[in-house]
Image 1: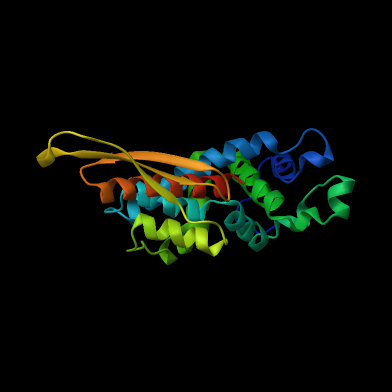
Image 2 (image 1 turned 45 degrees about the vertical axis):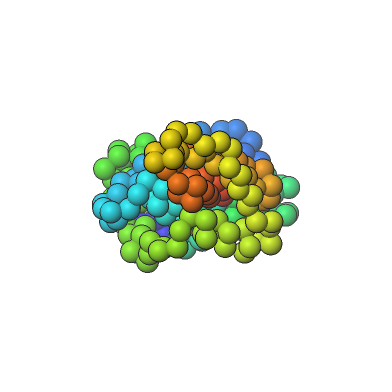
Length: 219
């Protein structure tokens, strides 16, 4: 393992790399804690690096950095697969190469560092691991509807459906309620209200896209 931290309690590192298929105790509780720690530390880092980004943009950037596939890449760089403890079935099926298992182990390891050495040490290690990745990200100039469409097209899924739900107010101060719905890769819907139909569609699309990316992060 190539993590730049020497554990005072080596048992914590061992526990972080113990998959539930190996029995109890395992890394599930540490994974839960590590997920929360990662979310907070990366949110702070993005907040600093992108001072003009909106909440939606920051959420999208975080989802690009903290998802199963991205964390599995980090786990491979740290060679966590070599130290994984797996049950017989997972060993035979190549579990040490599986993205979900590697990502969970990475999250658990982040928590193990926190328990072993405290938040400041954990924060410093996470920021060092992610600094280059954050710098490589660029805020997209594309609007939310375009980004959602491109995301769905990249997976071969149907395009989103927008519907005007209602409109309110006088002509000079009208607001529009618009819904955005997708059926694949999972059924999601969001509704937004804005001073123009287009703006409401953009906000609803942003909401659906963030839900999709958040689901990918948790997978």
